[in-house]
Image (cartoon, rainbow, N blue to C red; front, side, top):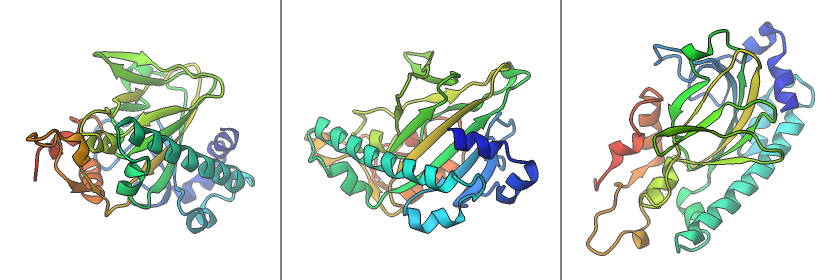
Length: 259
């Protein structure tokens, strides 16, 4: 968190070297969510880093601050191990082999968003991020220990997820909802901003490889029943997700039923 904040406090001309609004770019500094599509922008700057395999991407990461590459890459390694352990536990909870989810998702990509939410003079007029679900499989979120901002939707109400010491927040993404045939739900969440304090967060995303074919596990579809979602490649899903506004209906709704 400290080295991420140090990066965002660099001079604007230093950070501008990394700026891009091209979503497919592997390493980029950007703002809001998808400035090419939005009519209303969000009160967020973020540094997007692809993280797997590390040896491929780390050389192009920021060299300033000096400790950035070492600290962030160490964190990325540990988060990946944690995410894979969680996927094993999720597989077992569904009555599947422990390695089922990991095998279906293939050689998973991993990327990270180091988020910076500046103080906002009129926080009622915008969000840090509007309501959305994550298009990937699983997200590990490191929250600012001192400032709340994350909210999740539960029973029609927005509930604050206040930071807890030495804790990580796990968001289940759209692909685990599809693989589980709806047994697990991809969580709707949003980020709010405030006028008094800046806020940081670090979101790490484990994503299926683009060619992975996603669909409900056969064991989870009852005899004679249709699966809730048709099969699709992750590349198809991700392209559809980025072609829409973030807060539109759940992208999975476009993949209901058999193809």
